[in-house]
Structures are given as structure tokens and as C-alpha cells.
Length: 356
Ligand code: ATP
Image 1 (cartoon, rainbow, N blue to C red):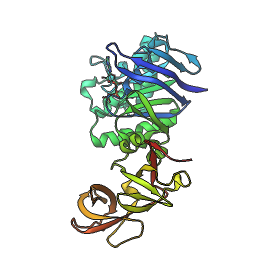
Image 2 (image 1 turned 90 degrees about the vertical axis):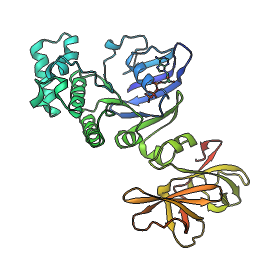
Image 3 (image 1 turned 180 degrees about the vertical axis):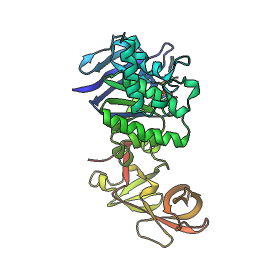
Image 4 (image 1 turned 120 degrees about the horizontal axis):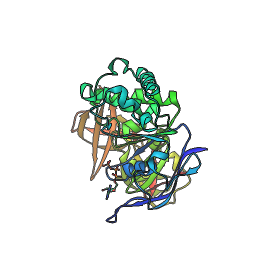
């Protein structure tokens, strides 16, 4: 049975903003599912509607096979962690963790024991008497997690839970949270606008735009085979090269260069048709010498990314970027050649991926 199922879920806010537009989604039991998308695409609304904190305008929310669309948040058996953790400043860690159990009228001694057990597990054992104001950001985040874990809900909902942490703590918390979720096996929906976070943590993810889900897949699928040009341009730490092209017999003409047809589109393109050609800078091999099937252009910009350099070639009015390993980067002004990998390049027709 799937843990979370959304059927034609629509949310129109008073004032007319359609935040969710007839959205369908199935999250299987035990999955770590990330919701990713630009600001305002509807991620938080989706999470809050699953939790029952927003009422759906139409459609259904089904949890563990039970239609909960009209059910109050407290009766949905879900636990939610917010961006600001929502800890009670006047309560110590024990009481903060045990709070949901208090709401469920669990006896004080049992609450305390459960809070200590979960607190120990999250490395908070020595901090149980402190108040949130006496904790670091990372420790507060663990208290918020511990509170969720203490409730034994059938699913966890996270709304950008790591966004208040500094970069290093954030990386640590990411690994920690992922490991914890694996151990507990609890279905988790995780909202983030940070694609690195989604790609690193999720079993599967959805990319949203303007109230719609534009693609659902594993991080590898979404990264390597974006279903449309929106996802292609949104995902990736360096943006995908997206260039206008034409089919010319057995090859493509892209930015004035003959390049190989992407393997995924072989046999699916019509001679003469217009496409958008996509290839990530990671999947280009760069050379200072001419290579058949490569883009040739003047090296306009070289950006140092640490272990590699992002090289921008100017081809007339088009720009093509390639990642070049450290030590092999060219100097600006030279002519460079960037050969795309046919097995990693993509063709888009009317914005959608052409693939079998
Ligand atoms: P962010 O990453 O910035 O938090 P988001 O993807 O979580 O954004 P939502 O907060 O779900 O997006 O908002 C989706 C849309 O609904 C936006 O256009 C937003 O302005 C609108 N919206 C959100 N809450 C309300 C509200 N209470 N009343 C009216 N419109 C709202």
C-alpha cells in the first residue's frame, strides 16, 4: 500500500492564486521523497495540504489507503518539522521532545522515558535539561527531529528543515537525517529549494513549477534525463547547455556545428525538424586541438570551481560551457573544442524530451 497518495489535488488560495493545479502523486511506504522547485511553485502548500494545515480546494489526500481529505491535522498520524523548528522556548529539551505525547495524553513518566531514549539516539543525552535558547542551531534541529521521532507517525513531513544551518552543519545534518530515515524506514516527504540536498538525499524526487509537477524520478533520472527544458535548466550545479538545433539527415546542426544525434533520440527525429539540443557541461570533453563533432569557439570565460574549471566558449551568438579538470583549463582568448557525449546529450521537441 502506498503511504501517501494525492489525487487531482488542487489548492486555490482566496484571492485566486492556484498554488496546486490538479496534482497527482504516489509516495510508496518507506520512501524518502523530495519536493524541489523554485520559490513560489507550491512546495510548502503541497506539504501543508498533506498535513491538513491547508484545506484542498478539490481532489483527495489518501494516507495509508484512508481518505483523509476532510480529517483534522491532529488525526492524520503525521509528524511535521518546520523550517524554524517551532520549539517551545520555555520548555527544556525533554519537554519539547515529549510535547506531542503530552497532547496524546501519555503519562509524564512514559513521556520522559521516551524523550530520553530518542534524545540519546540523536546525541542529545547531555542536553536534556537545557532550553532551546541554550542550544546551537544544529542541536535545536536535532531536538525538532527528536520530537518528530517520538510521535511514531506513519509519515514525516519536512519543510526546509536544514535551511537555518550554516553550510558545514547543513552537510552533516543531511547525512545524519538520511541515515536516520533509512534506519527508521518511515515514509518522508522533504521540501527543499536546494537541489544538491534533494539529489543527495532523496530516493525519488518531484520537480515542481507553478503548481504542477514537471517530473518525478530518481535523482539520477532527473539529473541525466530531464523530462523537459524546465527541469533541464533548473537541475544541475552548472546549468545544462540548451541550444537551438536542426535535424540534418543523420546528424544535427547545432549553433552552426554538425553534432551527433543523442543516443536516446536515435530514430525518433524527422529530417529538417527543429529541436533544442541539451548537454551538461559535465558531459563534454574539452580539447585545445580540433576534434570531429566538437563545438569550436573562442574561450570567453574560465571559472575556477576548485577541482574543475567551467569554460565558456563563444560560438557566434551562442555560448557553450564545458567542465575541464583542474590543470587542463585553457586561457581566455584561445580557440577551444568541446565534444559532447552522444550517450549523455538530449533532444527536446516543443520543450519535452524526445526519447523512447
Ligand atoms: P518558497 O520556496 O518560497 O517557500 P513554495 O514553493 O513553498 O515557495 P508556496 O509557499 O506553496 O510556494 O506558495 C505557492 C503560491 O501560493 C505562491 O504564489 C504564493 O504566493 C501563494 N500563497 C502561499 N500562501 C498563500 C496564502 N496564504 N494566501 C494566498 N496566496 C498564498
